[in-house]
Length: 452
Image (cartoon, rainbow, N blue to C red; front, side, top):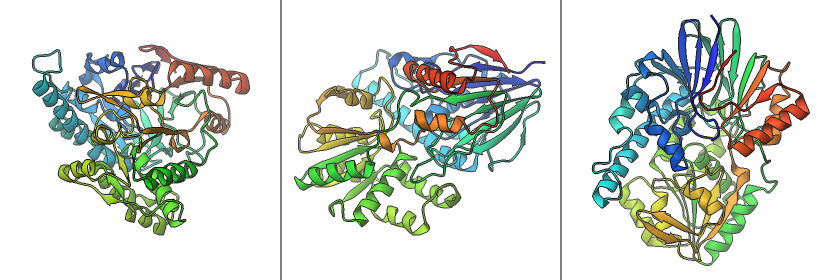
């Protein structure tokens, strides 16, 4: 029997990570993420899964972000009965992220029904919090570097950096090896350890999110210090949309260092994300995955006021500045940060700082490209606040770092596939790998099957 890969997601887009691996009579799904961004992509979440969920023996997850895990509750709801395998850190973070995703989907459906903003008479969520809880119950945790026997397939998790628990996945079946990077972290990340070098493999499936550019040379601390000092100096509010897991921690580290150095004023810093707050305990349990000292780790969480309740979140919209508010979601697609942008975005005294990748079709991407009117809660909000972008805070390896990591391979893979990238980014990285490394590389099509 021949082993096979089929690309069911993260092709022609960064999101919706889903790759089917078949070998040894076993069917394994690597990642099971949500499509995000443009409506044409989000509509894929409502389509039937490309193979019957009940026919999948197991799911292997690279890390906890929703574009890699967010479809799992729907997969379970629609008949998947196997186990979901992940590192311990990913399992623990998914226990926060997936139920929150289900809750937000239910809230959105209720809002649309109440305000009649849906074309459906009874808008229904893709899945509910109960569905998410059922998916979380199917997780099985594994340490890095353990060999996991899934019948005709063997799996091993390898550190990827990026966020807590993030893993590269090595799969062996039918005498062949496939290596999946998941989201590859940065060698110079101030918080997380670097990704482990690439081992020998027959097939490599690597991300290409930043495949067409390098991160800005600017020091993110300098940008934060400049914007916070100027905006708070005039009594304004600095809103920083941030992914609740990963980006929030990096921002707190940067701000704590700036405060200690006296480079930002003594103004209140609010962390308004219950998920980010709950994730702190998980990060504390996995100190071996990040590179800062225990003292600095403690100090970064002493800086902010932790906002837990909805009522306290609403009060932030009334207090005004000067202050800094860190809140999810990082691409302005939902969560409490939308209420803050709704409250403060139209005042030119304030500022919004975007950090990291903004997927096409999101409000964050619209702001990034210069659009200054956002549709929020059924009305248009004019954005008069300053808008800044700090690309150097991204937790993804950029083009140069991906190329440096590829060069660690003891020998070229037989075939390399580029996923998790917009078309321009994936094709630019393809050219770099062909020209500079001489490897056999290409960008797969959605639904394409290849032998390994």
